[in-house]
Image (cartoon, rainbow, N blue to C red; front, side):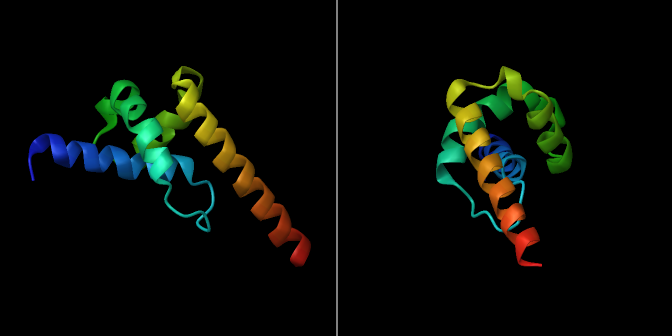
Length: 90
């Protein structure tokens, strides 16, 4: 695996963690497509530390592309709804 492929894989993984606010959410190919470039642009200094990349993406959400922001918002809303359902069931 080349250095670029390794970095791209780490960014994709970190992007996934950043967008998954709940473990019940599945990895989104759309999230990888829409946010990997933003993660490289905004948070490359945090590579390879996944928790730091995650925190960076959340901190810099206002600077991400509209497509990535839409994915982040959609997945955040889904996670919030899932937490509400879990709380109501208990």
